[in-house]
Amino acid sequence: MDNLNICPVCGNELIKNSSTGKYHCETCDKTFTKAALCDKCKKEVEILAACGSTQFFCNHCNELKSKKSIEFFLKEEV
View 1 (cartoon, one colour):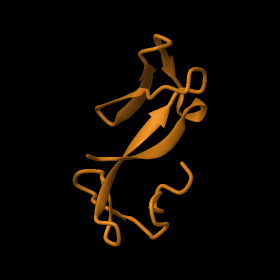
View 2 (tube, rainbow, N blue to C red):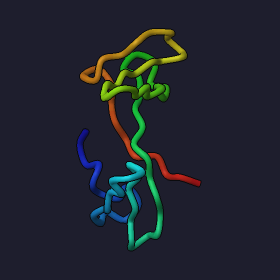
View 3 (cartoon, helix red, strand yellow):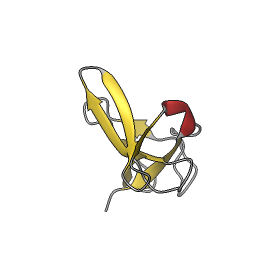
View 4 (cartoon, rainbow, N blue to C red):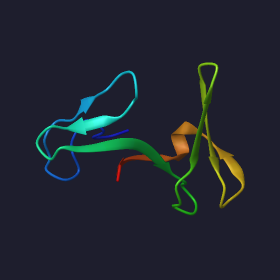
């Protein structure tokens, strides 16, 4: 989870909205969400969160992924 508080566009610090979990850059006026990539196929994985537990599932590989095996990144909202 490296650099999830740095804007990938301008490099300034992001502000996290604790109620939505989204990140906002006041300089660029862009909003980002946290996403994750599969370690095998490098496709985006689905983040499943329920009852305080978070799991990651790759629809392409059709398997659950551990938090240690995925790579987090910021995805710009359109």
